[in-house]
Length: 275
Image (cartoon, rainbow, N blue to C red; front, side, top):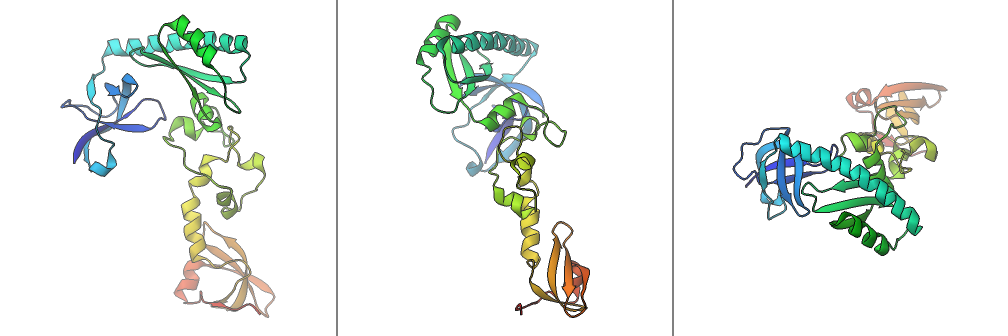
């Protein structure tokens, strides 16, 4: 078992485990930690707890200290410097005629490195750009190409639902989303209806997917012939979330709704071969 504290570096960023190093760290307290990028400023979103060896990546980096007001001022100064660096880099990208879109700029806490995030359709030869930036800022330069989903996460915005984007408010990681999820939920397959601001399938298609998959395993398929308390009939409609079936009864020329619970209580969810 290892004692850890969960630290997040951005509002909706991934949570990383660190060794609390004997410090009494409370939830939502700001800390200074040692990372592979150098010294960083983060927020302890998961209090101290013990986890199994399989749940951590060893060796654990340590929390150096609890952040104070001076550290917070450094973070604010870094943000202002990053905004200025953005303008400089934007101009240099245009000067070099590079086919890339600058998205964000970030200073590490100790100003040991500046990271420039950009999107591009393909590979970009930015070696001359890096030389120019290094001569201006006199520190390590990293240009990191990101995808359109990461761009939306960094920039934020309002989704089709009218709420702030999930990725920029609470989603720590992107989970795979497929067109099959939209089909299983009987959604329109019109790309404009099921795509987010990033142009990819909306992350929220994943939220209810497990419930739909569970319901589909319990419910019969459309056009399947089943036995009901009112006789044999063919399934002509499904309300998956409410687990309600519309059954066209054989020989009675009418459609009756049954809940899955009603059919199970009657022991009637057994199928027959279609005529």
